[in-house]
Image 1 (cartoon, one colour):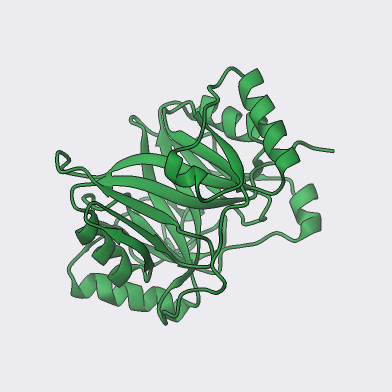
Image 2: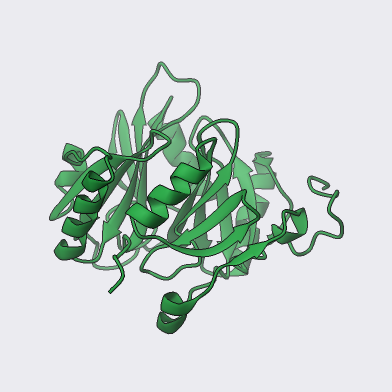
Length: 291
């Protein structure tokens, strides 16, 4: 039996200059619902999971900092095996933060090759039902990591943590999936600096994506792409950016989910390095960035 990967991407913890202003951004532009509000800290959710974003005020900052990425694990046995694999590979193993410890049965934290803190937890607490918000995401699907440590990162996420490769674009981008079978629960691309390139939210319909797009235009946010039709995950999406509040945000519809059989047997494609393998609607290899 193959080593089990984490089950699903659950949350991102962010330090921001103003947690209240950042919370307002995620409520209006993404459709998240507040869980807890304090003067210097806000958590928000999109589904039944306790929260998908934690915001903490750090007035010394001009832009956001990523403090942790959280993934759930499907069983205590899988968690213990993950912890053993992480330690054996020479990565640190330490307790999760006190706030997350109170929201799960058990878990551990580590640091990936990029210096990003990861928390792997079992039995993340849930709500009885999703928030009563009309325009909201179904799920936060993935973080997309940019890194000069591409090969080490792909090795860590696939060989140590057990993520399964779905597709590659040349030797520059890797799409890796968890046990929830979404096309990718983490993606990694080569870059000069480490960053969380964006976080992706799966919306309820394409109409919801376009309503988010209209809100971003109305508020004159930086929309960093046109409407994109992804070749890998088959999702249609756009991206908006407000660095004070977090990584760029992708709102998407139609993200591919593998069947249980495909999840075990899928052979990843290695696609050519070309903008048309990022967006199949592009008409030429040199038209990226046109509006």
